[in-house]
Length: 66
Image (cartoon, rainbow, N blue to C red; front, side):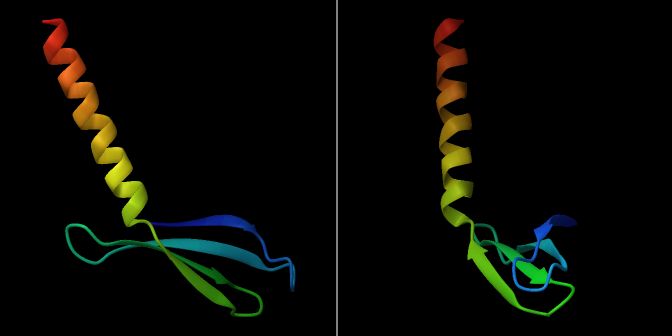
């Protein structure tokens, strides 16, 4: 998946995001400027775990309401 995220504050180029899945529990968001080529990545494993916990909690709530 690739999408335009924001304008680079250094050169004004488009910064794009690539989602990289490196295994079951490893998720990286890779940001790269198409103008100057600067890049960084963010390990999104914490966000993945938060989402899993949310859905687990929702499942318990739905099952308790039955």
